[in-house]
Length: 205
Image 1 (cartoon, helix red, strand yellow):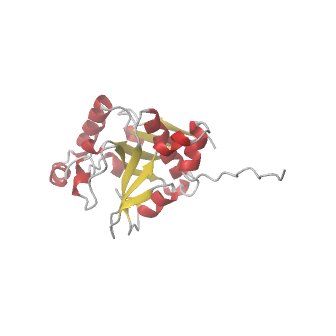
Image 2 (tube, helix red, strand yellow):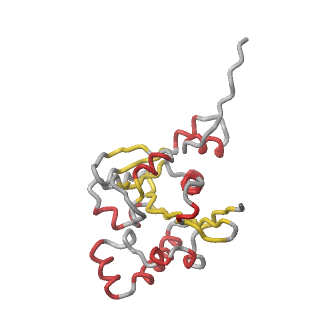
Image 3 (cartoon, one colour):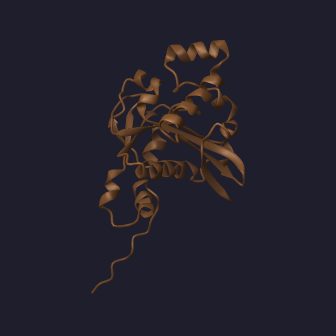
């Protein structure tokens, strides 16, 4: 099974699930988002948002392909580009963090570790760009795929809760802790994100 993660651009935006291509839940404030949906311009607003973030800030997403079939994606950006985040009870996102906005894996490909690989790829990108952490709003009562990521999934890939809430806790993944490890970045991030690694057994002298 060949899998690859490539940066999200306007050219491969069409590879996102149809409902996600026209979803502006995060990209617009609640009032503007509702208006865009009513006027039938949500897909155009999505394209405009991605274009603006790419120009102003740089890469803001990844698309996952398995054997050249698009099976998932992840979006991330500084909170200044994510108007909806201000509407959450546990906002704001910390000024030193980039927000993990949303992500999705097609049902037939879930449970294969692709979600962890996506977060790991985002972490490596942001570490290279000098950021300290990733934060996300979790859904503590998650029941089905939606715009807000399930809190349990975020915990499973290494996030910790920094502001409790019964519905939407704010969660954080520190990147600076990797600096103290002597392993290379790949090994450090694997450990940071909870990848299963066998520690070498200590031999008695």
